[in-house]
Image 1: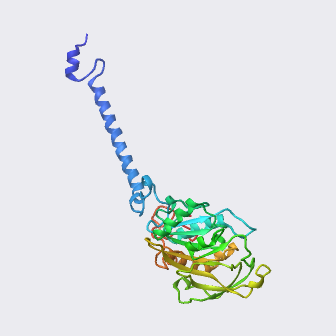
Image 2 (image 1 turned 60 degrees about the vertical axis):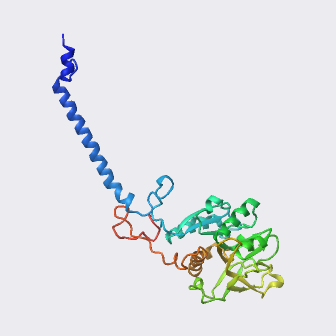
Image 3 (image 1 turned 90 degrees about the vertical axis):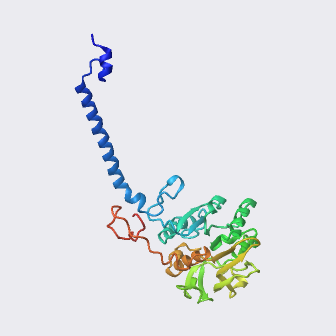
Amino acid sequence: MTNRRNCARTGTEPGLSTSTGGTARKLLKVWILRLVLGALVLLFLVGPYAWAQPGRGAGPEATPLPQGQNPNGMHIFIWAGLKSHGLGQHDYPQFLADWSKLLTEHGAVVDGALHTPSSADLEHTDVVVIYKGDAGYLSDSEKATLNAYVKRGGGFVELHDSLCGPDPAYFASLVGGGKRHGVVNYTLDAPIHYDIVDKSNPIMKDMSDITIYDEAFFLMTWAQNPPIHVLANVVIPPTRSAGDHKGEVAPQMWTWERTVPGGQPARAFVWMQGHTYANFTNYEIERTLLRGIAWAGKKPVDELVDYVPPARPAGRGGMPGMPPPPGGPGQ
């Protein structure tokens, strides 16, 4: 019979020899060594991307930023809407898709939606870009949210008929001008020839007196104190809907700055075309919009136009030092 006290003294259980215990300890050491080596290999593979890329871990609960996003860029919210009108016109969802990519490639941090931005959406936003039909239809709570955003100095960029609604004076308090819904105050499709009023303005650096096929607006409600600063006018063409307003000179591109009582200075940039969606790809217009967005967000006017993305890190689809391909980051 085995002496249990002897077993306790020698550290072995009945039926387990000391040679078996030594083998178990050796296997445990090998298992721990493999675990440590595996962790080191994983750390080596992940390390360059976990620490070398700016902005990693900056999101909620250390969520990594999308590859190619500039973590230090201006924050832009695109307020779009559902598509209206015919083929190639008023393509608000396509703008959200195209310009969220374009602005990211130009160094911005972009968010957006097909609904009015909430207080949470606007918390860190520098500028709201609005391309949505009749965005002037707002509830009291939505107006309160936008008013608070303006009071803290948030910027707006308004495109085409976003400034249309039942209360043009209210929208004029946001962007300097408003257009009443239900009134014939548009040309419909027509040749729109720009007369650049302020050629020295840095926003207009790449803009000339071009003609595009689009739509112009007239019979506007204007802010008075302060008034808008006109960048470009259009002579209203003689379309059927223009009627007796043909030949009138109407501002179609402007900036506006104001400070509400107790608030910070706020800016707005407006381009009233965009009826024909293809005009967003016009080189002169695209660069003018990029500068207008930067200006409205109180950034250097060329910040988006001149942005150069950092070199792509080695091992992520490109050689070291190579910038992202023309199609966009990570593609």
